[in-house]
Structure formats: structure tokens, C-alpha cells
Length: 172
Ligand SMILES: [Zn+2]
Ligand SMILES: [Zn+2]
Image 1 (cartoon, helix red, strand yellow):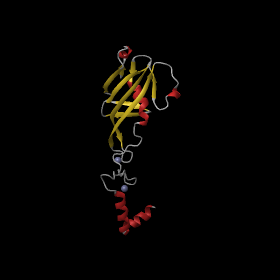
Image 2 (image 1 turned 90 degrees about the vertical axis):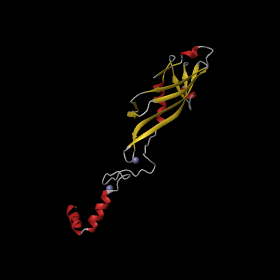
Image 3 (image 1 turned 135 degrees about the horizontal axis):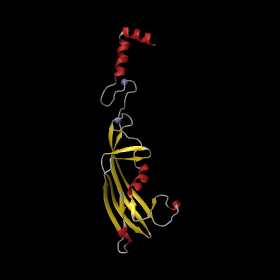
Image 4 (image 1 turned 180 degrees about the vertical axis):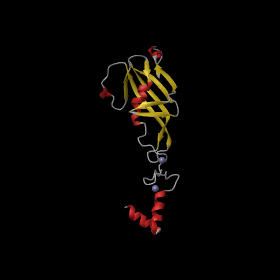
């Protein structure tokens, strides 16, 4: 997943546009393996900034997540913008508080490295299949979005039927 910007060594050329898709089945990010449902798509522009370069890009892809309430599969779209300086010169990190900055040693830019280090604030921490997902019943384990809770029903039956009430006594 490399982008070659050697053409920018030409004085006449001020910027390079790119539009690239990378077909990865999955990638690891902070110890979690993400199953990708789409290629990782990166498009944008690298322009000269003195001896260095400025990259403005959009990154998007979808991965398979699971709802944190009902655990069903959810397609999660990640779509965010990258503003990053690509530095050939030495630099002081404290001067780049609001922008990402990467040291580059050649005209080959490792885009996956840039994606991985800009991802952390852009992957949703909490995935829900819908805002009002009702989750899983902790008693009977049914998915409350599609089934009705079975444990509530059986508690009612026990209360109605005296034989079961007696059984319940014995089981205590
Ligand atoms: Zn859910
Ligand atoms: Zn239940």
C-alpha cells in the first residue's frame, strides 16, 4: 500500500492527486482484527510545503462489527479526512499539535501506516445495530429485537399455578 510521489521532485509539479483502493480481507488495529467488507479507499492530494509535503485525503471502508447490545453483525462505515504533514526534514513534534505528521525517508509513502495511525479517533468505540436496540435478555438469552423474553412469561406462570409455586419453594 505505497504511494510514489517522486514526480514532486520535479520543480514544475506542485501536487499529485491519487485515488487508490486496497483489497485487504482484514487488518489488525490495536490488537483487534477487523474483517473488511470493502476495500480500503484513499483519495486526495499531496502538495509541496517547502521541503516537505502536505497530504489531504479521505479514507473510507466498511468492516464487520458486532452490536455491543445484541451481538448481531453490523456493517460499520468508517469515513474520515486525513490532514498530515509528510516531513523530509527533522521536526519538533510539539509544533504539530493539531495535525498528524509523519517522517518520510523516500518518495515511497506507506499509506497503511498513515491509515493505522489516524484510525484511532475515527473507528466508533461503541457499535450499535440501531440506537434503540433492545439487546439480549440476561435471563433467557433471547434477542429482544426479534423475540419476546421467555423468562418473564415463565415467572408469571409460576405465580399463577400453585403447583409450580410449590416446586419453586422446593428449589430454593
Ligand atoms: Zn443490536
Ligand atoms: Zn428473558
